Length: 97
Image 1 (cartoon, rainbow, N blue to C red):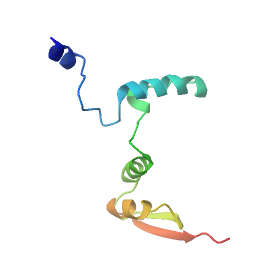
Image 2: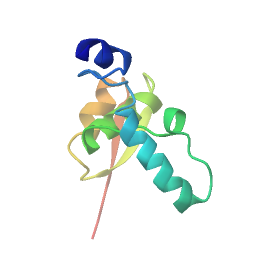
Image 3: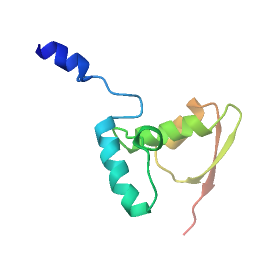
């Protein structure tokens, strides 16, 4: 019985690619009030295990092979490898005091 309930309730160690749905629903509920517009958990909220994963996902979604990506230098240490893995060319713009 317990196994059947777990299967029927989709209770397992796997989550959807966009992150844990129960968390996404709570975030959507919270930000619906803050932003004063309906936020759809299934299509407008993504959760990740950390900032680097989120940044990497965004870079892979936006950078195409051959793109040049302008970034501040110095920058966060994962930007350059992520851009290169996506096929882009990082272009550093030095920050001067």
